[in-house]
Length: 271
Image 1: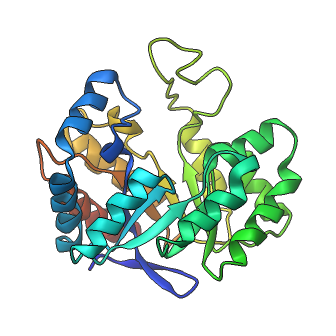
Image 2: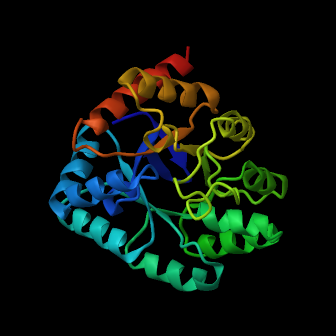
C-alpha cells in the first residue's frame, strides 16, 4: 500500500482517486466529457478501481449523488475494498436529506461540498459552517471541509471548527468570473491560485488533500509535467498531507503512474 495519513481512526493513502471521470465531468472540454462517459461502463469503472487497489490506493472520493453512490456500492458488492470518502450535496436546503441518504451507502467519512462552503462564504454565511459540520459529526464518522476559496479554510481554523480533514482545491473555480456559465469557452483555471492555497494548507491543523493538482488535465502535456505537479504538491504541503486525483485510464495506466509519482514525491519531500 502507498504511504498513509490518519483521518481520525482511518488509515487513508496519501493518494486517493476521484469520481468525476465516471460521470464525464472532466473540467476540460466537451470532447473529453463525452470520451469519459463513453468509456466508463460499470465494467471499465470497476476495472480501473481494481487497478487503483492493485497499485496501493485504498480510497475513492465522490459526491453523494445516487448514480455514483450506486456505482461504488456495486463495486463493493463485486469484491472491491476501497474506502469511500463521501461529499455532501451542494444545496444547504437539502443538506439533511442528502446526508441521511448517503448513510445508506456506508461512507467511511463525509466532507462538506466545496461549492456549498464557497456559496456560504460569498453570501456572508460562513457562521453556518460549524452547524453543518456538527450534523456530519452526529453520524459518528470522520468529518471534513472542502473549499475552493482559501478564506473558507482559514475561517475554519480561526473559529476552531476542528474538522478531521480538509479538501483544498488549488484552483478557485468558485470565483464569480470563473464558472462555465460566465465563460462560454469553459471554466477559467488561473495558476496564480496555486501558491495562495498551498500557503493556507501549510497552516491547517488537520490532514489535508489537495485537489486539482493537475489542473484537470491542463498540467499534463507530458509525464514529466505530471511528475513535477506531484513533487510540487508534496513539497508544498504539510508532512502527512495527500492528493486527490481523478483518473482516466483509457489511454495510459494512470493509477500506476500516479502511484509511482506519489511515492517519488513523498520521498523527495522527506529529504
